[in-house]
Image (tube, rainbow, N blue to C red; front, side, top):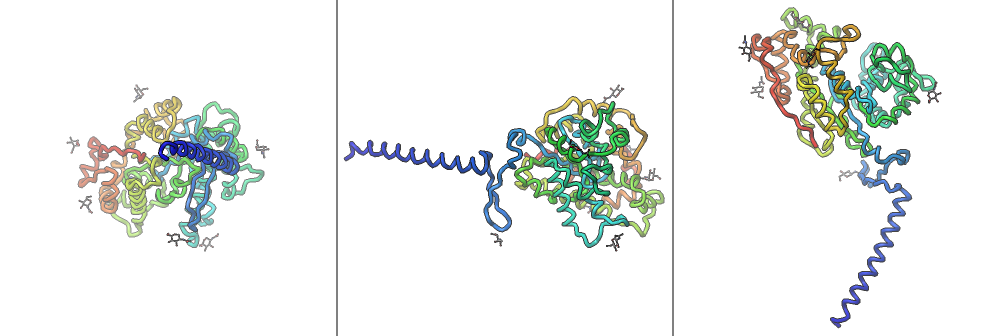
Length: 417
Ligand SMILES: *[C@@H]1O[C@H](CO)[C@@H](O)[C@H](O)[C@H]1NC(C)=O
Ligand SMILES: *[C@@H]1O[C@H](CO)[C@@H](O)[C@H](O)[C@H]1NC(C)=O
Ligand SMILES: *[C@@H]1O[C@H](CO)[C@@H](O)[C@H](O)[C@H]1NC(C)=O
Ligand SMILES: *[C@@H]1O[C@H](CO)[C@@H](O)[C@H](O)[C@H]1NC(C)=O
Ligand SMILES: *[C@@H]1O[C@H](CO)[C@@H](O)[C@H](O)[C@H]1NC(C)=O
Ligand SMILES: *[C@@H]1O[C@H](CO)[C@@H](O)[C@H](O)[C@H]1NC(C)=O
Ligand SMILES: *[C@@H]1O[C@H](CO)[C@@H](O)[C@H](O)[C@H]1NC(C)=O
């Protein structure tokens, strides 16, 4: 009995191997039929049914490239240095960069009085923002047409917001070859954007980067981070809220008129709207809390960068961001930084959004442009935010104005990888 049993075992083993082989083979053919051997991800949907998500079949000719394609979002707030940071990606010839395309959505939701209609709640606006981003990362520019005013004809528009701030939109095939790519030159020479061509051109770039200041919190883009077809890399730009406020006061004259009066007279006007600073700090704090709590949906996708650290050593910080995003470093980017962070050479006048300034010097310049009373008020309201990000508070005018003592504590914010 014992002697012959090994033969039976062997036979059984061969038999089961045969069955397994047939099973695997037939499984493969099933997958080949439905998913072209591209791995499918099992996802739970809202109604608790299981669904398989496969790669978009139109991308099948280049599955590898698809995998390495990065979808970078520069997530920031107005007057925090996001134009400068955007340039670190715009100057890379591998990247199709867009400067604030969400502007068009906001415009469409705003009526002629310039105010967002009360009836349109925040949720639907955020939903529209996400939808547009999702489509743009797919190089679908037709989706944008829903929001451009006046509506494009034959997929052509002359109203593409800040078109000149995107090197890709100012280069062939979307425009003739310009001697130098400059926003003003591009907007006068290139005029219309053919959106069909923009989509085609977008597909030829290795990566895509979009800058936005219109989404309040990191949590608001969670669905994009979770989308398995996107390779989202969030670069969260923060800045000392006192610097943001000073910059806004001198840029947005009408909106911040009361603050300007406060600053110049030293007396707080009754009309002051403190929510203009509390909202900066709440949004910053909520986003930073999301990042610091390291939820699984942000793993490998989140990096916090302080504007002041970029200003101090732009090349070093740029390289760190490139490393985080999985991008190859480019000589073009290096050259641009060197040319634009040294001296005060501004090529075309002194318009408000220029990024060409001596970056290190301007980062803490706000201290000379805000009266102590405003600074103290902001420090009370933003106490938490300031300490989270390593910005020291001051308790005297002397301390505020003594520029040789930096208020930016040395901190290392490692990307969440
Ligand atoms: C899905 O599952 C969750 C938790 O298991 C439950 O609370 C929810 O009611 C379910 N939804 C549906 C549509 O069945
Ligand atoms: C703008 O929105 C307000 C508030 O909803 C509304 O009363 C007003 O009629 C709108 N104006 C225009 C021109 O649509
Ligand atoms: C836009 O570009 C596409 C693709 O090159 C071309 O077929 C189309 O004719 C262009 N549209 C216009 C209005 O020029
Ligand atoms: C800035 O430019 C000056 C003059 O061109 C040069 O001497 C200096 O080394 C530059 N500084 C840096 C940090 O590149
Ligand atoms: C605030 O007032 C000071 C002194 O009057 C001035 O130098 C500074 O430019 C003002 N700041 C802003 C943002 O207007
Ligand atoms: C600000 O926060 C610090 C610690 O984070 C705390 O010691 C201090 O009391 C707070 N100040 C105010 C005015 O809330
Ligand atoms: C300014 O700060 C520096 C560095 O902390 C310090 O040495 C200096 O005494 C300060 N000046 C005044 C006037 O407080």
